[in-house]
Structures are given as C-alpha cells and as structure tokens.
Image (tube, rainbow, N blue to C red; front, side, top):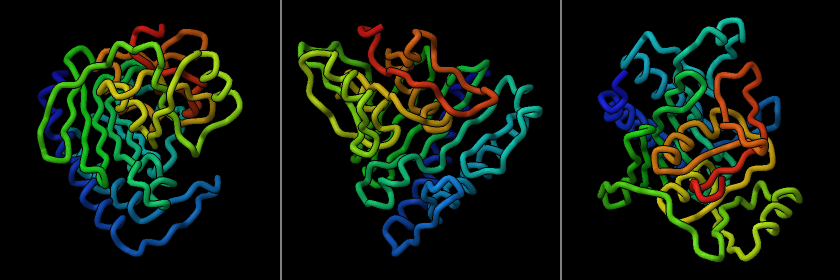
Length: 255
C-alpha cells in the first residue's frame, strides 16, 4: 500500500472529526462515565462516527478498531494483518477540564506496527502526521506545514509528563535520568512534542491502551524517534489484550 497516497484523505477525516469535537467542546456539554469509570462525552461519540464513516468510504477492505466502537472478539481480530486503530478523543479528562490538551487520533497498523498516523489537537489548532520511513510533519495554528524531527538532547533532559498520570515509578525513572526539566503535555501530544523537538523523553509507567498511543507513535517514529517497552522490544499492536505494557518514547539517543 502506498500510504502517502491516502494520507491527505486521513488528514481530512481527522480535521472533520476535530471540527465536530471543537463545536461540542465550546458548548455546555455533559460528562458521562463508562463501566470502567472513564469519562465520555458526546464529542467522543461524534468523533468516532465521523472517523468510521470516513475510513469506510476510503477503504471498506481495512477493518477498524476504535475505542468507542463495539467490542470485536479476538477470534476475528487475530486475523487482521492491517487495520485502522482509532481514538476519537485521547485525553477526555483534559477535554472535560478544558485544558485544550486533547487529541483526535487515527493510525494504520500493519503487521503489528503503526506505519501511518494522524494526530490533531482541535483546541490548540495543531495537527501532526507521519508515515514511517517517509517523515513527519506539523501544521501549526496559522496553517503553515513544516517537517519535524526529534532533537539531540542537551545536558538537562526535557521530560514530558502529565499531571494526571504522575506516579512513584515514573518519578523514580525521571530522577534516575539526572539533570532534567519537566515539560507538561496531555494525551498523545506527549509523543508529538518529542517528534517536533520540544521534548526529549516520555516514560509511561502506567496503563494505556493501544488506541491511546498508535497514531502518535507513528508520528514519532517517522520523525526519527523510537518507542520501546522496558525490556527493549518495540511497542506492538493487534494483541489479544489491547492494554500496552510500560514503555519509553524518545529520540534514538536513549536506546
């Protein structure tokens, strides 16, 4: 598959979903809670609807796994060599707290790896995308598009973290890095800040799901970074259990 040929359509779909999300974000929306006590709003559902409709129009041959979609049994998923992996809104808590640090995420997975990803931040009016092996790009709030690349870190490592997910193992990991400074970011923007050279490393020693990380991982890898588990293996997708193990995202300097 020539990923670059369909990338503009995927960006368009993400932008359409972002417009729906932003409209609800700027309204007096209501928050509900799922069985696992995670929050959900009409924006999650609207984004899911737009993305699934758009991706199905783009290719009916590629299955879709979305956080807000129906559960698909492993017996069906284990046969998927290629599939779309979608998080209609990553960072719903940031959405409900109105921090602006939430994202819309669409990834294409092939043989367990994210090969293409699009991440939009509707409230920040930013977008990131990348195709592994072909490069990564950012569209800023003025609409300007430029290529992005991970940075070589200075002595003080810029560690990207989220105040919503800071725990003792993460604090210990950060302290072991030595001289550092914290860069706050929410949702999958943590990967994107490394991809554009504004941060150096993101340790995640806590639960995430495959849809939380796939699109931004593709962007980061396309920008020259890596994402690996703590035992040094790549973060993989399309597992029976969609929960990710602990991982570290960074430029290649760390690994």
